[in-house]
Image (tube, rainbow, N blue to C red; front, top):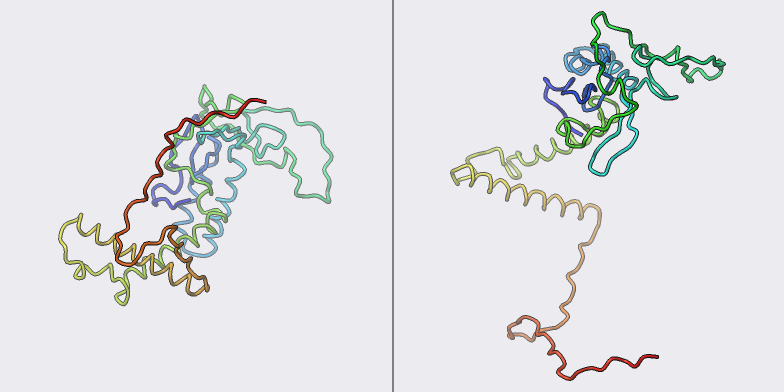
Length: 261
């Protein structure tokens, strides 16, 4: 789970025809307004514009490729969103007969093929369809675009819930490190050694001490008593130097095996 730079919040790449948008793989013919919804969310100035952008981001879910299986090395077997009995879109590249169904008016959440988003044929279509549009499923190796793919798609409610807590924790920790009353890591006058290596090592020590202090403060506030050190198995007399434990000598006599029954 991560936040991308502003120029990478939307389309980060592609794999076998699938578009990687916001850290998730989608249909290659997903509408352009849904692809650029991340930039629309960043550029929004009013609450209405922001809600519209989030609605577009939520609409991406219908075009998301389905994960059929996870591999041992991070591989994923994915399927076109227009395939299967639980298809989320209808596509001209996947013509399927529409059986007659009875619509229950008391269950409006049940979506029939006629109610699914339809992918229309563009004016200029490619003569050869990509792999995701031709096969029943394709396998995406774990090493493909591993830099961009993430667990929660960008700006979705699950991403916002996870990101808000993580960002608050990081920003709060950075603020404490920069406070002049605490570690004052932002003040270069308190770090006398010169050179990048010396500055880096000194900052590492300061951050380590700050984290240790935060852990002890948490244990104190929660009333958790630290564990006592275990007593040594062999006590040494006062003033007697403690040496390494002596190994027991091996038996010199040959031991006969027990008789067979």
